[in-house]
Image (cartoon, rainbow, N blue to C red; front, side, top):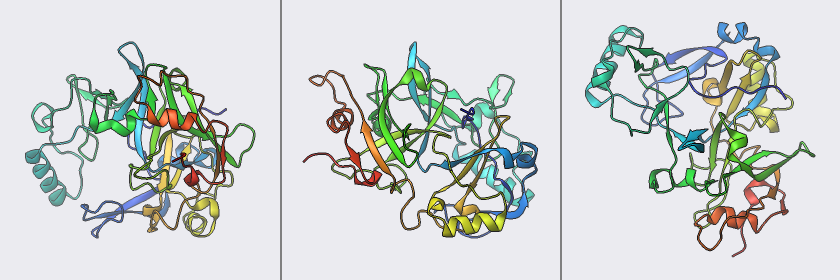
Length: 324
């Protein structure tokens, strides 16, 4: 299998983008819109995007699996952001210079505090031993998901550190039209980035679970392949998102042979998301969770509930429900 890249930094758009001073379709608080032009990004051309693996861009929150306390652990994305004073200076600089480049950061004083366990993401540039912000003024990073942290309760619901397992949505090995939800050893996910999707993440565009019975799972980046991707052409991509059943996705991420990641989001093309359901949510799924945790002492309700459905097939991912 072709090696997939990890999402450890900002992924560039497949097209050259420009900023328009209008309300963002993606973020309510953002008063500008980043849109694609028809010109293909030179970064994408250099990485041979035409020969890359096209995969579905998942709409969730980014996670990472690496060691913590000597064993594989799930880490949540936490970008270190500027404090109010620095943010005000940064925006003033952007407005007057029409660019983010060249802004003089004081990394020791300009950024909010983060937990002691925080680590910067891979490829974050350092200066004098300090991690430096990206062009948006953020320092990408990670914090471990510990069971007692309510802020990351939905992250916590998909991992069981006692048995070293995680709940993962992945393609079915025998039928390319189907998906699996399986309990997978965390050790098998080491150094991968994944997307947490589900009931309480980003408005749940895939229709997973309900308030009474929330369902969340992890999806390895690059694992959901687009089988008939359109060419990297502005008009053909627009048509594909509009007209193809497989185009009912948030976007595409291309995994290039040299490890470069390139993306396009529907919002880059002036299209809405979600837009009348999702291709992923309509795919059939089989539950393959054979959990052997200590049911008497565990609070892993999701593991237990899915284990009770082991071997059960649902015609659509969004139809998964537990017995009342």
